[in-house]
Length: 73
Image (tube, rainbow, N blue to C red):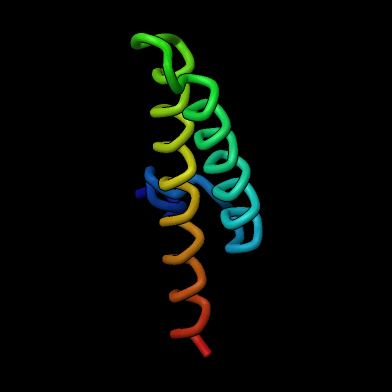
């Protein structure tokens, strides 16, 4: 058996990194949604959805890592 690594869904190494990257991607998602207002379905809306998914993924990882750190202490 190999060494136990991080789960496949874990996108950040530390909670701080997860919160920073999650905030960045969430900000980009909001910015792309603002650019997409008034247009028919465009690439901006598609990119906004993808950025929002990345932002949520990083934020969920950050929260779970933070909870794991607190439970270890």
